[in-house]
Amino acid sequence: MPGARLSVVVTRRLPEAVETRMTELFDVELRSDDRPMSKEDLVAAMGRADVLVPTITDQIDAAMLARAGDKLKLIASFGAGIDHIDVATARQRGILVSNTPGVVTDDTADMAMALILAVIRRIPEGLRAMQEGSWTGWAPTAFLGGRVGGRRLGILGMGRIGQAVARRARAFGMQVHYHNRKRLRPEVEAEHEATWWESLDQMVSRIDVLSINCPHTPSTFHLLNARRLKLMKPSAVIVNTSRGEVIDENALTRMLRAGEIAGAGLDVFERGHEINPRLRELDNVVLLPHMGSATVEGRIEMGEKVIINIKTFADGHRPPDLVVPSML
Ligand code: 8YV
Image (cartoon, rainbow, N blue to C red; front, side):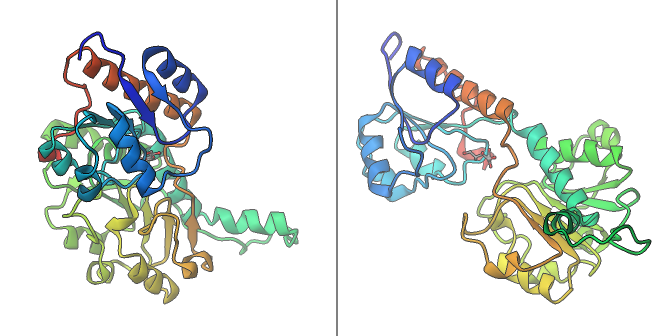
């Protein structure tokens, strides 16, 4: 492969600077419209590309990979999460998969913090009153939220993003608790003054705010199921900037409606953009359209990472952000 100009198919519009650089480096096929590709178009794209650059909106399953043919060598995904790709099957078929970790960390953690503040301080309700013109002036008892400082934050998934949330939360005076498959090294735990809970059940029953920061894998699907959600204090709040599938969205919706959970800030949903309509009706819920990593800087850095992964592969080396099934 070294020296050859790789054919690269990009499934969505990317920042202009990224598309321009890709055009300089590769034999690239860019999209002129920005709608997600159909399944058939994706299979066809995989059939004619050495490298596919998909995003979260492209589900690539085993059956599609089986129809991809022999040309495809690398799936250089634009994004950190890789739950939309059947990585194990890709590897079996000799197709490498890479992602863009690290560059979405701070932006996503900022959004988790924004959601915590928005829900606890009732920012959308205040905004709505201003936009509707229904505000009649200051009152001592109006729009009372809670104080963020002093609350116990439970972080589910203490990887890069979880730790970035911990840093921010501590600056706001929150106490950090976490549940992670592996306990952090003592010095990292000390840096965050974080308390590890081996039992997720025990952690969720004791915290005031739960931030979901683990990836979606078969073992994290519905980790927050109805049984576990019921262990939470009725005054507790959940924010999710990771993947919707980690929470049973219908169970959460029922409990929010019943006042069994105080509030939620959700940037991601279980069925993509098909959101439980009942969630939209609730005052104690802040919904965002998957904006966690949506910064100009972040998107360009994601694109640069994709380019580095492809370029390194083209030069005959292992892409730096190779995803191996054992990481999942
Ligand atoms: C990305 C994300 O924008 O990086 C991720 O895993 O969830 C998003 O913030 C998206 O995945 C791009 O494909």
